[in-house]
Amino acid sequence: MSNVKKSTNPDTSAVRTALWRALHVQIDAKPHILEDQLGLKLVAPTDDWQQRPDMKFTKRLRASVVARSRFIEDLIIEQSSLGISQYVILGAGLDTFALRRPGIASKLQIYEIDQPDTLTWKQQRLLEIGLGIPYYLHFVPVNFETTSWWKQLLKAGFDSSKPAVIVSTGVTLYLTKEAIIASLKEIAKLASGSTLAMAFYLPLELLDEEDKSMQEMAEKGAKAAGTPFVSFFSPHEIIAMSNEAGFKNSRTISTKDMEQLYFSGRTDNLVPASGEVFLLATT
Image (cartoon, rainbow, N blue to C red; front, side):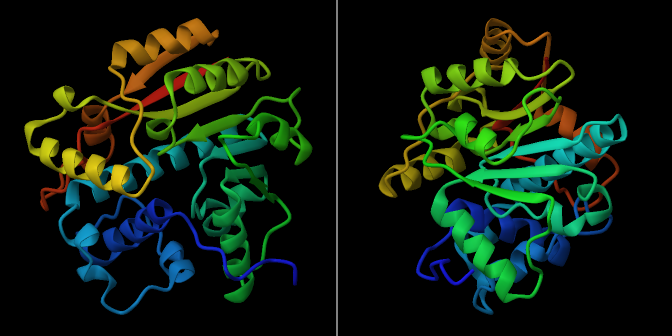
């Protein structure tokens, strides 16, 4: 692996998400929605990382991230038990499922798709900290603006004749509606019995009042960083796009659904922010 560059850096949002998952375990009350501190080990931040503004003042976003991760994990465990053997993560970032849950992951072929710099950095860190790269984990580096992720996925060994689970979080914000529809149509062609879980983001006017100011700040920050938010959709629009793309069954999972699944009975006022909606669709 000597050809792996050490000068690359992971996507900042991927790092933030990994740290939020770790922060949940370290400061939120039990029971934890997700036990994941491996991302923290990968990032190896400075000792004062918990004092970062994006850690201190983003409790609802942290709750959304751990709920999202738990929802996806529950989905892939369920689908694996039904015989699905391929798992594709679009915009994988610093996802750690393949390393944390080897008992389940080893029954799958897992394809992590993301920008080349993030995946190169992650691969290097896995080697540096001694975890290595399991035989069932495949990195698929893609520049989403210039390269077909579908073609690269096939090159990596994905079997399009077999059903799969495809998940996508934190991606649609940065894509045009046309690009999202094109991806949906591609995924809808997957073998019968495949499942898509894709996160979409609500426009500002559909957010809970307490989330609006944070969303406005996030939009300004993303624009200043050169990665502006592009696409927001209502639940009705999401379902319409899914149906038009050719999925057999489509439904949305709202923040309120997530609250009922994972946050009922909590005493620490940990609830997810209202901006994210999951499309759950099958071919």
